Image (cartoon, rainbow, N blue to C red; front, side, top):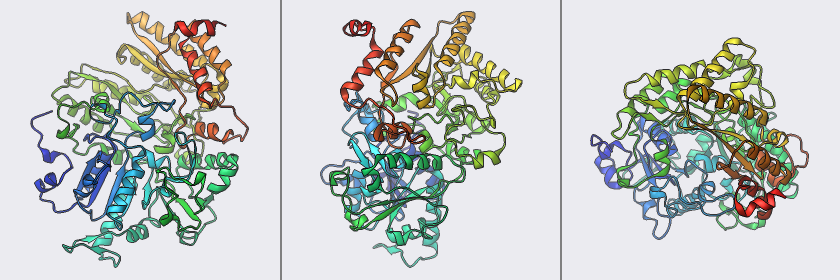
Length: 637
């Protein structure tokens, strides 16, 4: 850690750190289930820095102790605006458990990988504690855990369907997706209410005006996009409108899972439209789904009042502009863990400390991926100036040796790609721009990305930049019907392989069966063969000894034992002993999970097979390891 930093360079995490800044109270207090790393890849830090730039006093309480006397939840007192809960960069259950529901070897976002610093479902645990301690203080949920549970979803770890997470905890609303825009708009409305001396304000013992739950809901629910909240039918802002999408009720879906599959198509499409519609879903106040919530209690009676309530999901904001994204990345991050972690290793930070995110969003629309539900399909790219500014900051870090681990994004090679005619994109509701075929309106020019690579590599202090994000090789092999685009893709392919591979390039064909790949919304395996041929040939000509490492998934909906046997035979024939493999994990709000949980594909409503029992899943997964002695005889048969 650089000796030039002072404790006040981080957002306060303790009362002592608040006093160093001369603060009596905070405006917003964020509770995070991750360790506090002041870096643009950590959500709580991003929101904290954005609010700080608005002139607010923001504190972060990382990984509070949820046992005992709850002193971590009380130490900073009551905020003037609200408590924010950021459960972490990963879903807490994916972070803690494997597909076989076994505890992972370490928690990547905790110091020294410790498992005991994060509860299951921290969104619910933290909210319950704060609500007991501060009954009238607003609580705003954010982050991927709440975002992907904003409406009815299937919970793999509970093995049942769940209503919106708001039914399991007494929070006031969710800012879903990437939270910059809704959070900034929310605080601006709340500050305006304070300045106007709104009659619903509460005044503390020092006479400081504080936002109440009633005021927050009055201000937010009718004005803000990209939020989800609960209300009674007669409280739905503006009533049920003609262009609202009214989903099948939670209870109806419990009795007929096919109805949830019907719902999901609307949920996914509205998450990926530039001008989306509002979603509404009724949830009965009667305890449902075995009568228990995620925290083991009856469904929250305070929120539900033993009557029907409605989950209201306001449409998302349009994608950020490049200027807005730059502002988020250009905030004064130290890029370092808080000093409290001195001498401790935070695995996720070690992985990304010398990496740079170039863009946000992904138009691949992979069926098993949560990016479309959280970030959306429209690409928002940072400016070249912002990227180079961050790279220069990295070169000044004391332990930087000249090697960038990644210049990437959700997909490595989608930088600056968008529709040629925006008006067509504004009408589009396809969840993928490249499946089942590449959209003719997509501009797939790799030249701007090449210019970024070259500009970065010319900077003093940079010896080499690697690409660690997943590369979409189908984008490189596509015939763009434009010689300039085809030339740029070919040039990118060559430069990627010869200059930006750290010994191994990881790509994700995911399967060898075209039928399974079609369900996954992935390209034919023949394209992987084609790309491997190019990769091997390029390495041979350049005198490079590099490997192409493929990722594969077993037990995905539509995948049978026969499909896995063929995968084993094909990859063996290609001289692969697979290592980068995983068993399909059903995560909330994906097409694949909807198929797996309901037995129906949400777009065709046709029945679909899934390997569900531990025995079936294990049988498929073993085909990856045909080369192990105990498996060899069985698979040969």
